[in-house]
Length: 134
Image (cartoon, rainbow, N blue to C red; front, side):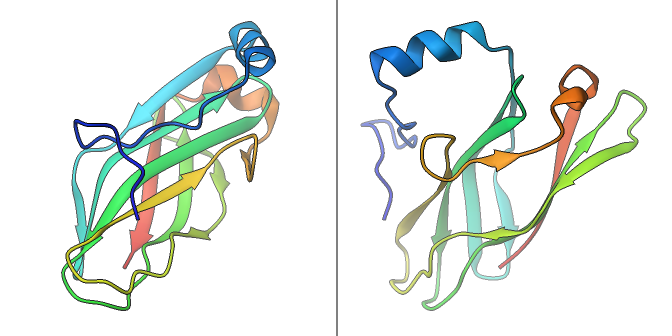
C-alpha cells in the first residue's frame, strides 16, 4: 500500500543527517512521468533521481482496478541529447497487487535497493524513457 503525504503524493525515503550531507555533495538529475496506464493499472507520481555517483532512485504509486496484477518496468532507457539510447536500467517489478482500487507504492532507493548505471553517463543523460507493462 502507499505511504503517502496528506496530498496523495508518495513520501520519499527519509535520509539521516549524515546521508543528507552526503547527498548534498552529489550532483542529481530529476525526471518524472505523468499518469501512465497499462491494462487495469495506472501509474502516477512517478519520479526518478539520477545521482552523479552512478546510483538512481525511483518511486511511484500504482493503482489497479482489478486484483492480482503487477506493474513491470521492463527498462528505464537513459537518453542523450539527440535521443540516442545511452544505457538501459534493467527490469524490476512493483509489488504484487491483490486488492482492487488500492494504491501501491513502488520504490527503489539507494539506502535499500538502488538502481545503478555507468557513472560516466551522468553528464550526458538528458531524458529517461520508461518501458512498462501491467
